[in-house]
Image 1 (cartoon, chains in turn red, yellow):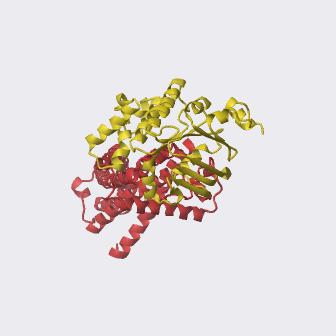
Image 2 (spheres, rainbow over the protein chains, first blue to last red):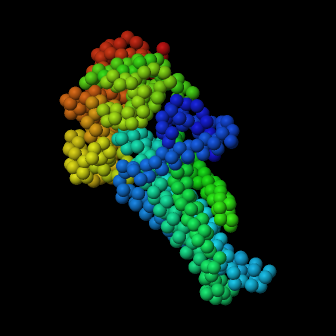
Image 3 (cartoon, chains in turn orange, blue):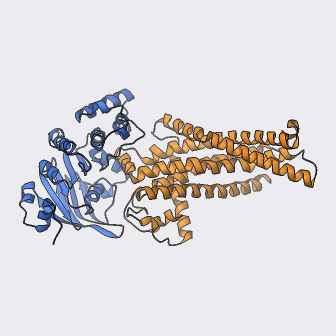
Length: 288
Length: 244
């Protein structure tokens, strides 16, 4: 969170910020490592910054004058670049979950017939969207923050504004669109990978019949809806939080590095908070 | 006409500019000189709304720049282009895509028309053969020419150059000087050049302002600068350490 401490210093300078001119970003070298005024204020400023960027990007989501092909290229880059990372990571998650739960149930209860069913419910509701969201935060979020941060510290954002290419419209809108498409598609692919890795684990270690494992009886439409909503929210929050970090980066290579770190930490934190919030809201609305 | 009135700005706790006033007439080739860190670049960035002063007023052709919102600034930036110190080309685009960007943003021209127009401006600065090149493969001189072509596409009435000859070899620097005094001056464009390249300044300027310790130290013609009795001015021209 140290990067945000720079925001706390008052300045009349705008490096660039989603808030427009005259905001909290300070061009002074080393301002990043200025004394934070308080963790709470820092947190509020970070949340406020991301919220305003979300508002300004969201407003342009369907009306931006940017190249429509660019959004697809970004979506392809995000999804394709993270494909094997997500598939392999989620396969291991599936293997571990099925192995551990089957071993425990076998020892404690002796009945493992509901391993697949309960794992699918957990996978669709929480595990799939949240773990994949974290993986996207690590890979896509870091990439967004580093790319935009590097543009920020080399005055490319200023040059862009001089070309009448508003950075939010030109950079953030395609990334937000790409982030949503990538999160939804990677969640589906990652869940499938986890599911089949679990199937192989159950079969190889516990001789579990595939027909016993493939039991979707506990998965309801509200579970799927919850998973889709979570995935959608992560697809929005990762580019926004990471973009906000990148857009406010300053101070050379160290600034870009700090922005990248903050993007991963901030995005992961937001994912955990959103996971809890959506789960609670879902519980209140659907009672499950 | 460009007017700076009583401009003061503090950055990172340091007063960079302190009550600076300047007037730049239409068609002038106006050089702002001074040592590194005196606020030359800050001065021109304020003109296009990339920085905002603490105090003072800035007018561009009678318009109060500080009173403009982001949309107003976009319109104003079409009139007043800027070439940055490090060219700031977008590395994910080819040279022609860089040059086409402002055309496509400011007009509804079809792709092939925008491309034709971009090529025309690239030809104007003699780099049409670089159209499909990746900016990362070009040297600083050529990158700067691409950036100039990109700025020219907006057909501005004024153009700001931030240290245009820094990092260029002597031949590329002189080529830039010729561009300023030839092609650009011929179109009666107001040119503001921030520089500490003394040779370039004397070659191109018809008016020079020197900033020193946040204040305007000198304002006059190149001849007046050359014959100035002020020790600070003389030391700057001769490259001697500053002594008050």
